[in-house]
Amino acid sequence: MRRISHEVISDINITPFTDVVLVLLIIFLIATPLLMMEGLKIDLPSQNKQAVTAAKKPTFITVSITANGSITVNDKPCQLSELTPLLQQMIKSDPESVLTIGADEETLYERVVKVIDSARAAGVEKYVLVK
Image 1 (cartoon, rainbow, N blue to C red):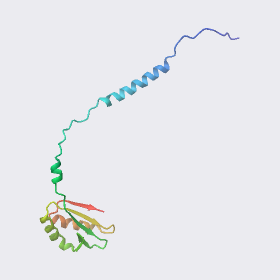
Image 2 (image 1 turned 180 degrees about the horizontal axis):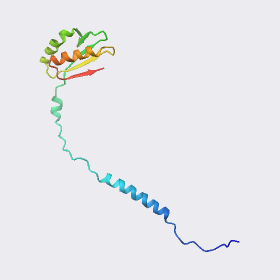
Image 3 (image 1 turned 135 degrees about the vertical axis):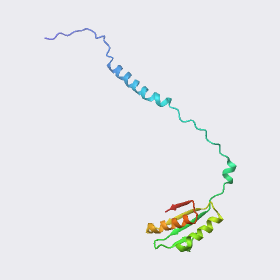
Image 4 (image 1 turned 90 degrees about the horizontal axis):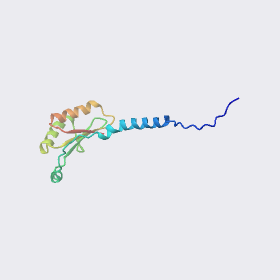
């Protein structure tokens, strides 16, 4: 037969308390270096609003290439052989011009590369390929 004890258990189980303390310790060990990190100190230049408003907007020269290979410069038809002198003339009048080259999906890459080569031969320094 079993004997029933009526003694009061006065021991405190500290295992759950220890688990909570260890988890909090780990969290603080991970979070503290993140809070102490400082960013790079950079002195940014101040912006001169007058210079921004006085800046000249670039002129765009648009070259389009159709699927059959025909070329237009600012919506005017042009042959590939005429492209370099025409672009040279346009660049001389405004050296800050930006050339935008757009081609049809069906256009051969070879044709686009020839247009880029003509633009470089004309002295175009800034060009953008557009869809």
